[in-house]
Length: 338
Image (cartoon, rainbow, N blue to C red; front, side):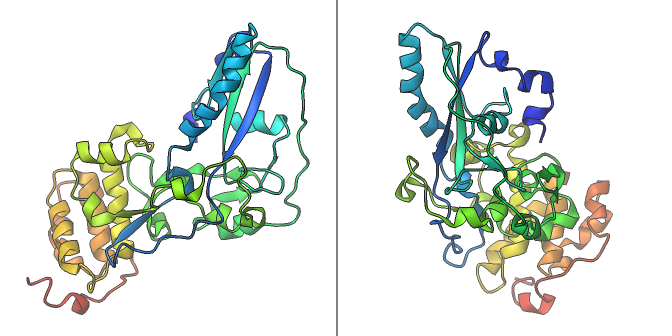
């Protein structure tokens, strides 16, 4: 992704974070991973899953924990700057050089006996601290489970991820979600944990110094409810997520894909149908296009027929290619006419 790598001169220069930096203090905060089960749907309603790393603002917790260390450095007469969840530096590589962990084949940093259920943070300082670590040797060996388990085959080689195919990016990036990946998105409304879930080192519950599972928000989103929210309400509920261009239609677009992958005629079918009809009539081509796909995916192509002559090319293109419909039109009998 280009958050950090768009400007390599900036993101690999320690002076970006602190002019005259001489040392890094590197930290990893564990968050609930292996011990957190995938969440079931919300009482039968179509629901989307939030990746484990996004179920709470863990970076704020990490910054709080790093603050006393930074303050002690300042009290000793040095400068110190906390760097966490910013685009200033390639923090994973700083952490690797500090000896915290090794790079897994999914490009995540894996901590010995703890895995990758962690967020990383750094303190940049001009204090001449003694080095306490060195890069660790590869600990993955022949294991390729993350490569094999990726739903979109985004891990194209060990340590190399095609971000344009990674679900974690697809569901939060701008524009259309490419048709070839929409079924693989499944019920993921934000982020993807799959390459971490299948990783053997991640099957431990070791998150020492981390956040207890009881302090974590629920990992599901009611999709029909989300699709009824205003921009202001989405911002209030999910504003801490990365939202491309701060355009709330990005979340709605992803929600329509999740709706197509999770809704059923038997559970809230009438509300699903009403929601799709409303989105098919909106003046936003991006949303109309994804609503057409959701209709075809659910076996409701007849509901979206008018979009075949839509004024927007992207909407009309949604009729190209085959889609594996999850239901037959007859499964919606009594709902379409109603």
